[in-house]
Length: 358
Image (cartoon, rainbow, N blue to C red; front, side, top):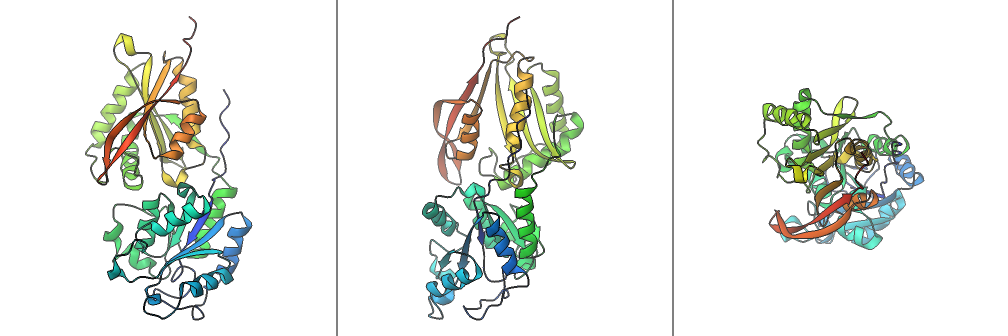
């Protein structure tokens, strides 16, 4: 079987904060007052040339006080090369629906322009930019300009359950990182089976995924496993003829896994449940497809003719991948999970194979 081609990172759009990110400082400067940082105009042009849709999103409470207008900010951002800008004009005490760290401006843009927010990136200098990005499902890049250093230090407690996907020196550095992901997808991803000495790295991966993904079973900090327990679990998997874990590794760092657990009783040894997860910073690069390819090459020798999994009903990216590689929906577990106070359904999916001839 041929290894699937690694796709270029399919980012649709980049959302760009204003004050402190592309110019000015960590204080509000109204249209006509703010100066772009050196090189920012060229970097914005670079993003456009590489086919990214560009959006601004910014909190501007001075509008409510009469210091400027939404239209003035939008027109200024157009002059900077950012066609569409979403503006929250309300002060913090108004407790509006649109002000960052709420993700509503991002969600509205997605509805208006038919975007998949899991294929979008946010660049900002504040903790509120990072929290809004993650709540919407976007990748997030923190710049050290403006309020960036404060976000990493004094304000770290406000977003301590998550990490930026990249911390950039400035906007220009952020753009270089984004463009490199598109034009130079990593060719040195290693897919291999797990060993007991990988216990610490695998546990670290699980905890990172808990922090950055809303689709995990555990909330951030809830996972109580130890390195020793993880090592024992790995050994148990590797002693089983129909269970194992594959790791995806990039430059020595474990960035994804696929775990398959086969049935123990004779009547169910032909079936196996799978769990697959990849770090958000590596999403959309074909790594999940490569992990599945490794499983496909192995499962016949393990006697597996049925694969099954569950997936949250709103995890459209994962559902699309599973359909693409041959899984079908068999049923729905209604109110299966309670995520941030709301019930979430899960789809049950499976893939069947003909029994291999003896």
